[in-house]
Image (cartoon, one colour):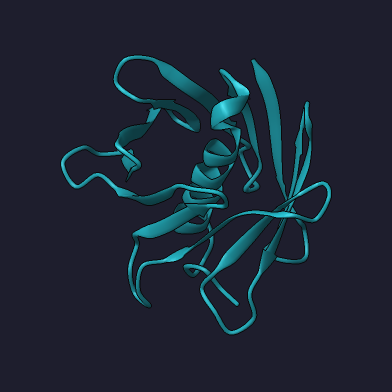
Length: 152
């Protein structure tokens, strides 16, 4: 299991992300709905943004391959889906502020949201899904816990 800590920055809409294999940084693209994710060497590893101006659906593009769509599942309360690359991942809020990501056959990650902040403590089952899991939790945080979707 890999441990990930996503901490919201107090006076901005950014995040600090630390993992047991290194940190990530988040930068918002000015005048855009996009968020860029960088590794500890400042290499871009992913980007995400709103599908459209008033959309609650987001795209996630993993550098080097991988396009996913993330959004609330219209059939199930407190469930979101992430579809792409032949995969369907479900993010479910099992208990208040406790989330589970699964692909139907196995659990990929579990996370807990802090009470009063946008902070998450996450455990990822393996490092192959680390980038995608981080992006899913960022998309969840932006869509559900920020006052307006994808601010500049």
